[in-house]
Length: 232
Image 1 (cartoon, rainbow, N blue to C red):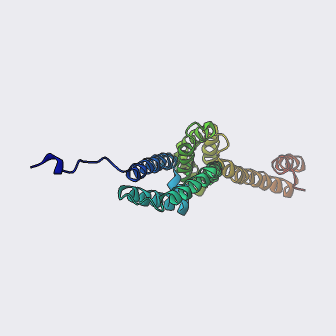
Image 2 (cartoon, helix red, strand yellow):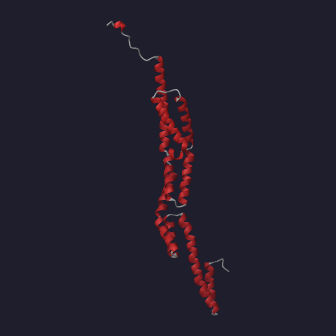
């Protein structure tokens, strides 16, 4: 065999080298956007990002597939569109954080402790260093801790054991100042106790008045007025 007759191997053409370089550049952009999407996912983006986040994830997968198959024609445009979408999602982070904080506070005020906990935990995923969310999680823990006391208070009220109900509602407020259920439950119980005391004073007052014991009747009526200042 004549060595001269064997074709000499040639390296990649200039076009091949340009294509390879372009693929590397596109792959670098793809990886960068993938990291941004991964960060958004860790910040609960799938929860608050909605369909836009889901679309961005699908787009990233499609771009990755095209890069593997070396189909570069539409990849630059797809990467540009994905970058714009991620910019828009990232711009919504403050709004998403505010929404979760508001939902947590609303749920806590209504005694929906699991919903409140979930909202504040989501807020911490969105912004891990958020001190306010951490503080409110503590309030959720404190509020949920008085649930047995509140249940006892409500049972006592239903059984018309108003003195015990008053004690338990007051205890719940001591453990968790500002607790909505206790704050709203205490006044009606106190009113019931007041009404009972008023009736206990009015009976003897009327009896004494009917018997002509006016001084005694006056004493009972004065006590009744103290219990119900708006009475005449």
